[in-house]
Image 1 (cartoon, each protein chain N blue to C red):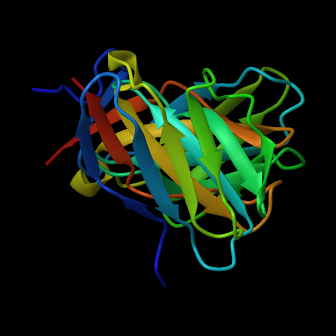
Image 2 (spheres, rainbow over the protein chains, first blue to last red; image 1 turned 180 degrees about the horizontal axis):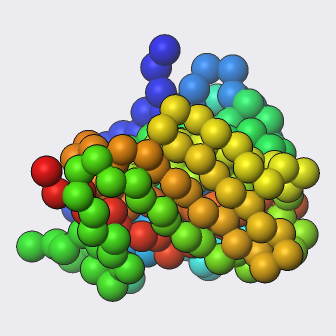
Length: 114
Length: 110
């Protein structure tokens, strides 16, 4: 079946601009996660949703970052007033339930802020 | 251009050898562990998982060992193939989120 789909695969934006990154999880997966990965590092947790609600947003670095999942399926990560330090690969993952189920990742969106 | 695996520990093996990748995890409350494989330009791919009530689990060509006393995980890959070349991450589940280690690059020479 289809895996986690992320669009766009690459995004180049200028410092100060607003960007939206989209994630389509595996059908039927109730939990959805956003991670950020810098070069040479492991993925770092940003936020996860159980259904429509953000159950844990403790990894969001500041209030420029926001994510929504209005219908409990597709999610959008929104970054306002982008900074060069936001450049990274943003990974989305989904799982059947929150605990003790493997996360299935998409291929990420590579964000470059110039 | 980019250098995938910059600053990562690297394990170099010959095709057909067995590989062992080690990981120290940080939280004694973690109760679920996963190994992921990540190829350049792709997201992490699930390999095998283990719950904290187990100390060994086997899959196809892979075995994960868990030592809770010293908070250590290892991934053993039998008969390593060139297609196994990638960065490998261990991840621990504490409360509701997965925390990833820094990763190990595996290079397999034909």
